[in-house]
Image (cartoon, rainbow, N blue to C red; front, top):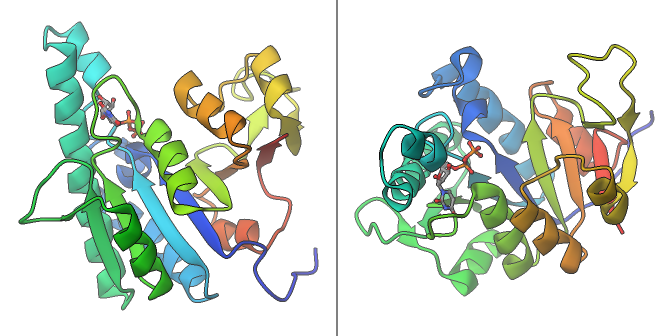
Length: 241
Ligand code: UDP
């Protein structure tokens, strides 16, 4: 497909799962995977697009799995949120080494390592061309970083939430189990709900739906895919009204 000349979006929110930073092992931090993600972000920043990244923490800790092993849910969730800050710092380091100016803002106060989340300040950073990385999720247990992504996208006026995954969009059934699974290039929020397609957790999804925030689910493991999405190519699945 022929590429449009200018990007389709001027301000995006990219949701990176913790697993994406864990590489093949999906746990811990894989320097190469972090570099690959950073490289895609650098490429899109080079197009003049303002970028906010919300990082997950599943490669380090998830509150729910902690509670299955006897850790109080809220405590486990705070552990998970701290994990997202570790990921945010890893991504910041990789981006800065590539010459991309960044700021990390955390929803949990951590003055020595990150700025506090201040909406207007985040927007100012974006206007100055810095990539803003949000760590700490929403700052509240019982939520997810997908919810943080939906919330922050609305707060900072992003035009779209780009949810990076390992599959190239949303299918009508699991493509790993069903060879005939069909990928949607576009689907309405109501249809995704009715078909019980797991796009995001329900809190995150309804926050997007209620505020008409489009979501694009796409495969960030394919080189240059973030650029393709931002340029308006039909990559992944668009969830919209
Ligand atoms: N978490 C939380 N509140 C938030 C965001 C995250 O309690 O607002 C905790 C929760 O325990 C979660 C963990 O942090 O399991 C890691 O985040 P998430 O599972 O969303 O990461 P991802 O799946 O994107 O790697």
